[in-house]
Length: 307
Image (cartoon, rainbow, N blue to C red):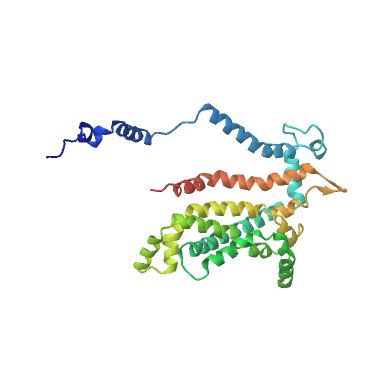
């Protein structure tokens, strides 16, 4: 006997058997390139978040435009006053804010560059280079993040004292040349973003290690390097604990150390002058973000999409 004829449903082509799936596929293709627009609720929530985030900066500006007596009164002022330029001039002249700005820029820039460079190199080694004891060394690096920085203050201060680096900028820069967080951050990024086949192909073509790092690792790691550099720069710019110990307000201060000497006199502290100094120290960061924000975000988003 011959085989029984297949049911009509089975003799149909796959496109005829699954019209709903084919329609869904076409619908996905049609909507893939569309740009989704946010609704009114999204804009309201984003506006509220922006207002909450910007209010401390606004009130800092308001406080810097009033006298010290008015700032501490209740209720606190919510509108700008007439003393902003007087307070700016007084704060700039009471301590050498110009020198502090230059020192902070040098320290934050060097710390950010060195941390990004060394963290990228170490992260590449931990992510893609097989060597004995790699996991143990990585665990030790991560474990250093659990040590409070206060424990290293006394031995570190004795070292810089013996070297004669007290009140010198290198005493702030050298202990921060690399960070365990940066190494772990770059290792995690390169672990996924950098295919090991790309490194092996470069070695087969005869590229040495430095050329691989320059032409393969750095281009792939550029988005993460931008994020890490931004985070480290801001953290170093706002760092107070160790610079206050290693530097002096009257010698070679950074901005945060200089702010510690603002507003003092007659056994009282003028809070308006202190907040004016805080405003001065914040403006360069806002300028950097205004000028480079698009480039940083563009670098992040360019590395976030996989083909």
